[in-house]
Image (tube, rainbow, N blue to C red; front, side, top):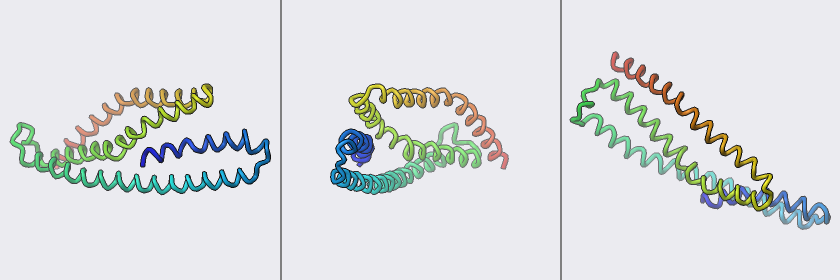
Length: 173
């Protein structure tokens, strides 16, 4: 499913290239109609596939999340470890924070990880068409990666202080 969604993303540049290079100079209206209908059908399938993929990811993340939450809650309440003597408010807040981390990995990170090879494929296709055009997504990808890495340290510090504050508040209650 992800394969087709990402391959459909490459169709529009090829469509535009064919229209400008072959159809417009030759005034080939019949070819334009056939090509346009084909691309519209691909976009319809792309829309349907994206909805199905979203449903599948939600379904899997809900079921796996439910099992992980049950196991985590059991471990937090029945554990004999030294950290098990925490107040109930702190345990509740810890459980909530771990649920946010779980949601991040299942809802955002896994689809991004699945789509990563297709980013490389897309850049390779652009390199075949025009190396100068491929520079833009390469630079954009590098900038996004570097910015996300640089923002991790301040976000981690802010999140850590927020978690400690919330745990202190929860343990007080």
